[in-house]
Length: 324
Image 1 (cartoon, rainbow, N blue to C red):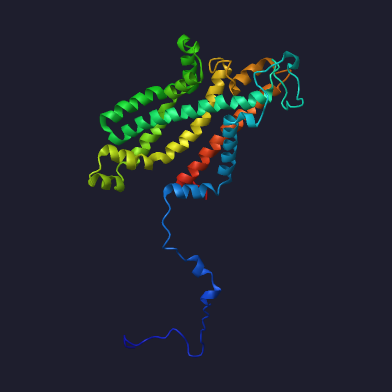
Image 2: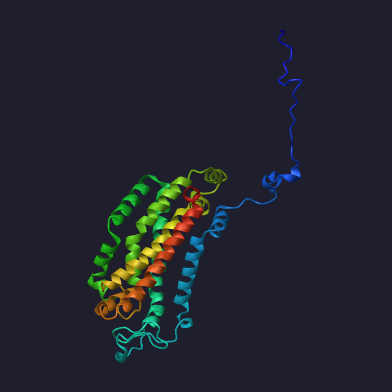
């Protein structure tokens, strides 16, 4: 047979018919359509789009919003003066206008629970802001400039990182100069001094990952100074892991304040907080355990809300951690 002779793959006695569906009968056209006019979403816009679809984020955000509302506007939830106590009501149960009963000193548990939100939340928020400013600045400088500056700052962070948060806070708050002037700000300062290394490490790693990116090199080649490139390009693109850790740390600082107040070296007894209420409820634990239960429940729900929010934000900002 010659090489150029065509070979038919079909028989003359058998005819194969093919059916092709009309394009209107298939959804492929709608599925494969692409809106070329729409602008691409940024990292934060894409993260917000994913967050709105997560029940974990919605639940935690609503709980945190409720906690913030209670802290800023306690008068909306109770009209009872929390410092107005009467020993006649000592360890009394729920009564009209007093749904959670009374403490050993005859104080309204519900009123103290509502007004104690402010101090506990203030310690967590201001401590988180402090560690973000100090730890974020040190971590960004160390990761961006590197060299001997990175080595010095990294070793400094290791020294503070070796100190356990609660143990170090107990030692600092037990000093006479601190113990005699206890307030919200002394607790915040203690937690900031001991809590910034974690944020510094996370920020340093994120900055190292971004500092040699193409858009940073392009900005420098166009004449942007190193400091301006750090502020306008590197730091904004390194915030994702920092925000996640800061969200979780806020809950940790609230627990730390409650622990210190429980041990008697946190907030002074004149300041209403969940930790002070839990500490005061020890004496009436057998006779009236509800005085300890309610502030403990409020503390647990608040901390859990911030941890849940941190998990949701992590899943939205980190594509590798998203649940499929």
